[in-house]
Length: 415
Image (spheres, rainbow, N blue to C red):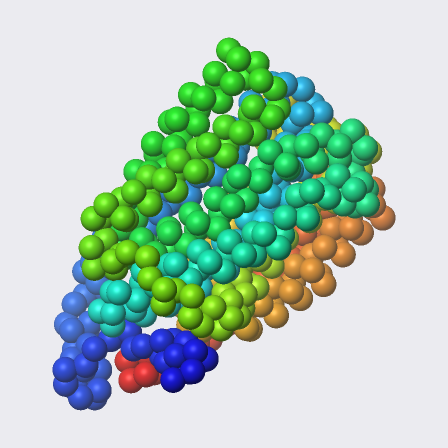
C-alpha cells in the first residue's frame, strides 16, 4: 500500500466500535438521553467537561502568564526594553507560535481517532511524525529570526525598537525549536485525557519562571537578554517534564519507543498538518497585526507598552479598558464556536470566514479608524474587534444555531 493510501486509511479510523447494528445503537443512545432530565444531563456533561477543561484552562493560563511576567519584568528595565520585548514576543514569536500550534493541531484529529479505535501504538507514531515535520519547518523558518530587524523596519517600526527587537528575537531561537516538540507532545497527552500531567508541568514551570525572572532582573541584573532566556528555560522545562513522563512509563500503551515508521508518509502528514494550521494561524495572527499597526503610531513605545501590559502607562491603559472588556467577552464565546466548527469538520468554511472577517474587513477598518479618523490605538483596536472578531463570532453563532445536531449525531454514529 502506498504511503498516500496509508495516510488516508489512517484518517478514516472510526471513533466508535460497534457491537450491534447502527440502528439499534442510535436508538439506545436516544433512549438513554431521553430517560434523564435536562438538569441531570447538564450536570453529568459538566462534570465530564470540567475533568478535561479544568486542567487545560490552568495550563493555558500558566503558559500565557509566563509571557506576561517576562514582559512585566522587561518593563522594569525601561520603555524601550518593554516595547522591544512586546514586538519580539507578540509579533515575530507570535507568528511562529501560531504556525507551530496550528500544525500540531493535526494530532488532535489523528491521535483522537487512534485512541478511540484503541490503536494506541499509532499515537506514538503520529507524535514522532509531527516532531519530524515541525522540526524541519523550524529550520526553514530560521531566516525570519536572523532578519527580524530589517523586516520590522520595513513594517514601519522605530529604528531603536526594531534594533533591540532583533536582538531579543535571536535570544528566542531556543523557544522556537521548543514549540516544535512541546505542542505535539501536549496534543499526544491530551488525546489520552492526561491533561492533569500537562497542568502539573506548567505549574512547576510557572513557579520556577517567577523565581528565576526575579533573580535575573533584580539580583544578577542581566538585562533584556537574560530576561528573554528565562522564558526559553521555562518552556523547555515544561517539555522535559512531559517527555520524561511519557518515556518513563506514563504512556505504556501509546509510547513503545522510537520507530522508523515515523519516517513514512511524511509528505502527506505535512500536507495534513499545514491544512490543519490554516484556520488557527488566521485567528492567532490577527491580533499580532494590531501590534504591528500600533508601532506605526506617534509615541509608538508608549502605545505598545499600553497595549502589551497594564504596569507602566496608566492613563493609556485606562482608555483601553472598555475595549479590553469587549475583547474578553468576545474571546469567551468565539473559541467555543470555533471548536464546534472544527469538531464538526467545517475547517475549510471557517478558514474562509476568518480570512474575510479578519483580514478583508477587520484590518482595513482598524486602519481607517486609527489613521483616517485619528483615533490612534483605540481606533485600530476598535475597528479590528467590531469589524473582525464580532462579525466572525456572529457568523459562527448563526451557523451553529442553524445546524441540525440530531442529523450530525446520526451521521457521526454511522460514519
